[in-house]
Image 1 (tube, helix red, strand yellow):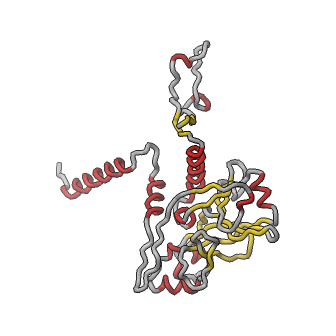
Image 2 (cartoon, one colour):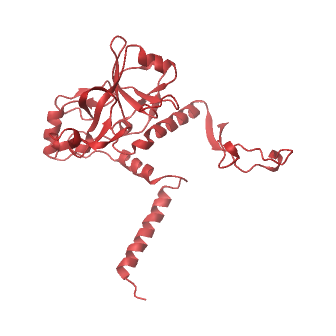
Image 3 (cartoon, helix red, strand yellow):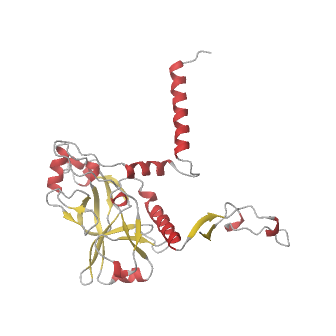
Length: 283
């Protein structure tokens, strides 16, 4: 049998790389998409050109806020499970405006659309390959542009979140000159809107949890399908730590004393199969 030495070498290198990945990501059940998401979130922005702008190093923390009184521009709403049966289901909404007299307006952060910017506006060639995200079902057929670059002319700060919106003309020029990457800008089609008092009532009815998210969440361009789930998991972790609890997984195999008198096992798992349910212990 003829052995292709180059092919064998490539296979060995591939196997070594796989072993390296396993050693770096030992957690059972970690998916490739989550690994890719972690890499994207941890990569700082590097500007090009003669006048580099500030480097943005995204972080991934979540701070829970208390009730409808916390509603303000820059706050993110996390949809509660089972609260909605349309595009708000498993959604995250960044509030752009909030007023007791004028109502509220925001954009969905995690609903990627099957369109790119050039599909909606061929004139925006500098951002043509950028993915478009569904902001909501209100407003005219326009797009919102968010970024984390305060030095862009015409950009307006969104509270104290580190997020800015607007400044399209200056941003286009900088991208065309190669000083910025188009991926540093996130585009949303339309917005989500609430009448005065409507959003506060929904929060009081436990349909939304108000939180603060860091830039690593707000501007990420990938991994949107898992974003809501990851934020919810972070909220659970924060709650457990605050209450001095730790999360463990119950053994799905019942001990001898857990077997009922009729020989039916008494387990923690739903439906009697699969893994055990989470058990919360004092730390």
